[in-house]
Length: 234
Image (tube, rainbow, N blue to C red; front, top):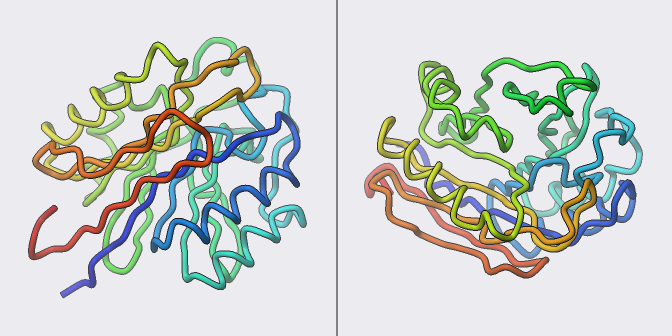
C-alpha cells in the first residue's frame, strides 16, 4: 500500500520579475510547509508578468529551492514561464529541476506570447497528480482529459483577483464531484504584477468528497497543509 501523501499549498510574497528573490521565498515556504508536495501559484517565480524571460530548468537562481527540497524530501511544483514558451510548472526536487507542464487554456493576451501545452500527470510515491494552471481549471474538458490519464489528485497554481476569492474553491469542488479525486489549489496573495495589485489568497485543499480540508488566509506567506491516505480516501 502506498504511503500517505502530505500536500501543501503555498502563497509566498512575490517581487515582479525577480526570480532570485522569489526563489529564496519559495525555499522558505518549502521548509515551512513540512510536506512531500508543495504547490505554488501560477508564475510564482516571476509574478504574473507575461513578458518575463522564460526560466530554464538549469537556471542557477533555482538553487535555493533545489537545496530546500533536498533537505526536506519535497517535490515543489513552481509556477514560471518556461521554454516553449509555456506558462509552466517546474517540478523541483533535490535531484534537480524539470518542466512538468504547460498551461493549456490561454487568455488572448497569453496566447500572443505562449503556446498551449498538453495534459500531464506526475507520480509521487504511488500517487498520480494531474497538473493545471489557472484558466485550465475553468474548463471541464481539461479535468476530463487529465483524469483520463488516471489521477488521484488535481493540483493547480492560479492567480485570482481579491474579489474572485471563491472561484478556485468552486472549480476545485466541481473537479472533485465529477472525477472523485482530491484537489489542491495554490493562489497568489498580495500584489503580483500584471495588473494584479490585490489577489485572493485563500489557497485550499479539498478531499475527494468535496470537504475543505485546509485553507490559507488572504495574506502572503501563508500555507495550508493536508495528508491523504488510501485507507481514508481523504
